[in-house]
Image 1 (cartoon, one colour):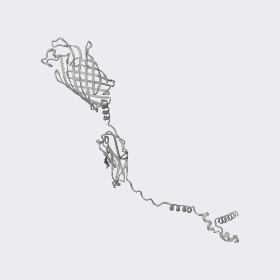
Image 2 (cartoon, rainbow, N blue to C red):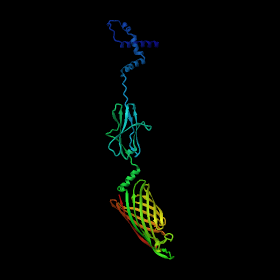
Image 3 (cartoon, helix red, strand yellow):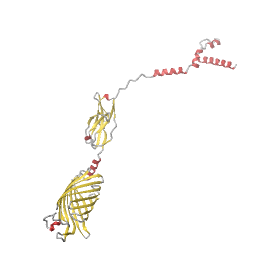
Image 4 (cartoon, rainbow, N blue to C red):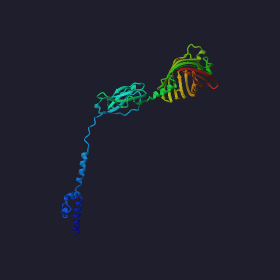
Length: 414
């Protein structure tokens, strides 16, 4: 019973909905109500109730397709260059500028426009195919000098047109070519020396150990003035690289020794003259840099002594600034004439003044006993490459006897 009532209600609602949607009939108001009801076409109400969702969605999709624009024309291919800019490079090595090119078939040439250090003009280097990169432009090593190197890259198309693709001739990209460490050190030292690499020098010294007792040829003893004087000259050149300096010294030494020469050493010599000693020598030397604060000096000495031809050698270690405050430990040995071992401290007391205390232990000239020398040197830079150094001190072989020493050195650097 209830079900029948629900069916009637649904039918009534359908009829009312159809009348509300459909336009009013054109018939006169006197038409009977039964004809209005039947004139409602049930088919007109179907789309409102049972039309599928797929059909409703199809209509907007069709309208969107109709609104889409036509297919665009393809963009013509254009050559492009890819390059990682350079910033810092070492000197004296070939410099490779690498690049890759999109659509190289459209490119006639790729050119590196470069201005090397020390030049104001630019020149061109063509990029080539390479195993190290798709394209490489090589700057020769002899053009890669310390300073600023600038470059740009241009592409030349098949029709001969050129266009900058990295930097430009008006605004070149700059990179720094670093100085080699040895070159930086050399320039700094040369600036300190006011550009003067060569030095001529001459010196003179007098050294006295006082009176020494010596054995006379007659079997007795004799008092001998133990000492010598020396005159020397030389030349030094300063490369200021690993080889910091090399020098050549020549000199003459004359003196008296507390040890007399034997008859075999000095045949035909008067007894009193057998205490005389002499040395004529030449000594080349070279100084090496190990590190900035350590240098090594080696010396070879060839000489003619009172007993004939003799060889010698020497060496030194320098700790500190080679042209400033430093400690020097060294030795020198000459066959027959003797040996010496020394330490020297150079102290820069003022911009133009250096004070140098020296301690030396030596058995020169031709003595059996070693003596100790204590002296100091004051060096003054007189300007314009000229300099003077004065020395003075005291030395002795025994506690009861000793003597003074004095010396002078003049040098000119240019």
